[in-house]
Length: 182
Image 1 (cartoon, one colour):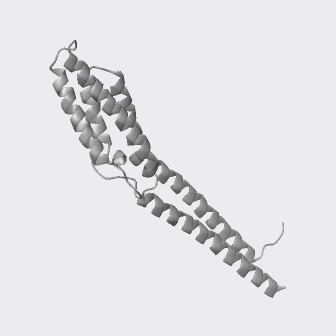
Image 2 (cartoon, rainbow, N blue to C red; image 1 turned 90 degrees about the vertical axis):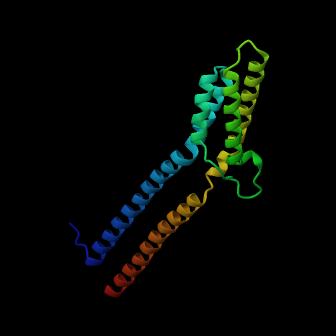
């Protein structure tokens, strides 16, 4: 069994600690990415799914319930587009459209399903649902580029680079010790 010097054991210890730190940071990054997705992107995906269901039905009660759920899933206001924002990606305007759709659905619910007013109201609700689906498709990529995501990404990369820099310095010191020993 080869005899290891104290410097080699110290180097192995630093290496193991650093690798554990890097693995821990990778796991933390993955967990944080899933958490961020589940709180910012997934609700938009759920809202899109509900809006697609709204387009496929003419039952005012189902539409009313789905619209309430969509209103709860979307942010109450704000625009995820930082540079050149448009009304298409403004969540406040989407919320206003959802309120209008709710009012239309409530009015249509009191009319006969055979009436022209019912069909016109349903066409309006279906068209608005389709428009909001496209608006959400436009807004979703910008939700990935939030301030918290960028800040976390920069810190995460910085810490990993710092660990590698620390490992490199320790390796250089150990080489210097080995050269002194020789």
